Picture 1 (cartoon, rainbow, N blue to C red):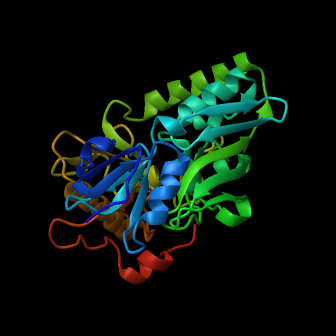
Picture 2 (picture 1 turned 180 degrees about the vertical axis):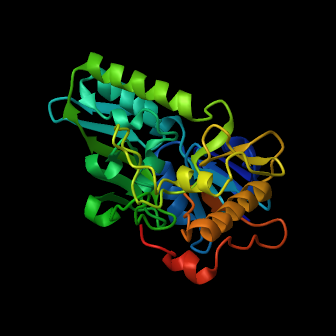
Picture 3 (picture 1 turned 90 degrees about the horizontal axis):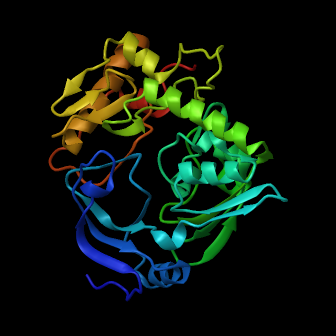
Length: 327
């Protein structure tokens, strides 16, 4: 296929495994890293409408299947990682490629509290798309607007009403690319904010397999909300708890394993394939459904083609679509 001319970088048949935290997956038809917003707009406007587009962040929450991805992957680079602070207005505007942790730290230095972002893997574009959150705070709680480029190459500014945020999701249309987002934040003492983030990091490192190849939380909490971090946090409907109750902490298939340290973290022990990882996840879903009647929903996004037959869902289709039991 002939692609439109670009000023950035476009590579055809580009393997994606090295761009994901789990280090698995086949090639994309093409990988495009735009030089700037105008380059992105021109490319999408000229790209044939039948060609699928997949915006990809830093690959922190993603399994690319072994057969690869029949799409043009859009990956934002240095031209999209700026962070601008307006301390008087209490807002932070960050490019889609700005890492969540960097945004939290820069905001804290300016006396603005976005500390919930400090331990969330990934970048701002993905955080907006999935309404990332922890410790009882979500992107939706701070969201002002997002600048996006549509599949047709048009620039739009979206509000919360446009995105319809919910737990771990938004309604950003397929193929639309987040360019930047503006978040509001309360004022705080920089030293206190930095200390809070240090405490959050210490708790994360003590409870999560941060040195292993993982993609963060594998499944959404059946409770429908994130951990609050408070002493009175309830764990009955946390994903890790129902996985533990099904006896699956440390359970493995091939090179894929549910972490011994945190059972809702799926890790690549060294030689896992995407099929290993997805099969493990579906097996966990099946066993949790059998044990508790609860349908775990994937938090990790799985995309691309299978290298053989599709992996069957771990729970019956009617339960998978509608949920087996209300939390």
